[in-house]
Every structure is written in structure tokens, then in C-alpha cells.
Image (cartoon, rainbow, N blue to C red; front, side):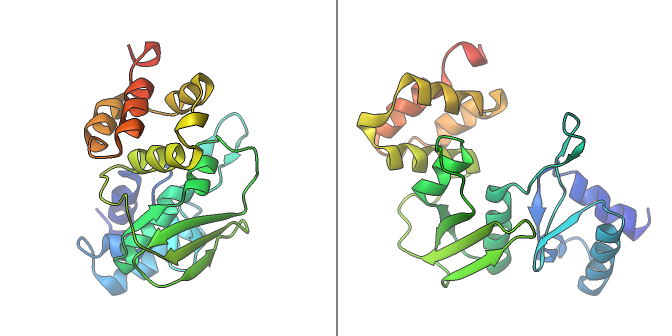
Length: 204
């Protein structure tokens, strides 16, 4: 298999929406080869350069007949991996990513143990990292982190059946058990709501 095909095969194997930097490919390919191949893949419109040094394998909407905007959570995680930062989505941004907020956000805030830094994506969306003490770090899955931060941001008294339903609709059935296991160590009231989100007709 040619290097070009081999790199693309590796990227596409992560599924559409995956965001990455050349660091994610280093274990498998030579550094100087990677940059040229990524540049060729961008020219061929097989991947996109979403920000400096960050790429994605874009999701495509058959309905809209166009590529969708980058997955913010995937891009933030790719940046975190690139610099070896641990990151945690802020409550406000988690609400936006889960479509629980009515405000359209052009800036997403993540807390990290790295320096304060901002990244502008090609569609003018900004991801800002703020140096902070991370409380809810250590979840294996991005879905766990998003749900925990969104619930905490809303507060126990503001969680309605409608919110539970909205979050439930966005969880893939295969993730249900993983999220339940992943979030066991979180605050008791948050975990009780996660149990409600992860049970019910949607996944039976």
C-alpha cells in the first residue's frame, strides 16, 4: 500500500469527524513523510486543515449535500493531545455542544493544565484554553465529560424531563454502558441523573 493510501486508511479508520494533528500519526509513520502526505490529502479534499497544525476527516451531510462544521470536542481533544495537556470542557460550552443552550456560540472555552491559548478555526469559531484546576478530569469518553459538565452548569434544580430527553437523544446506544461505568465517581446527584439519561425506551 502506498504511503498516501496508508495514511488516509489510518485516518478514515477513526471515523468521520475525527480531528488530529501530525503527532497522532507519528507512532505509525515517519515525521517528514507525514507533513507532505497531509498536505496532499488536504489538496485532494479528503481531509481539512481546521486550524494551524490541526486537521479533521469531515462529516458529510447527504441531506445538505455539504461537509459539516468541525466537531468542536474532537478538535479540542486533538489540540490537547498535541501539547500533552489535560483538558476539560467548560459548563457553558458543554451546554452548547449538547444543544441545550439557546445562544449561538462562536467561542468555546476549555479548562486545561497548559497555558492560556486561543485557536481560531477556518469557520471563525474560536476555541480558548484557560489554565485552571481541573476537577472532573479523567473520564475516558468525551460524552461523559460533556454530560457531567452540562448538568453541573445547569444545577440540580434546573434539570427537567425535557433536558434529560434532549441529552438521551444524542447518546449512541453503544455508549450507554460505557458512560454509566465511566461516570460512577462523579457527584452523587449528577450520577443519579446520568442513570435516568441512560435508561429508558430510546435504548431498549
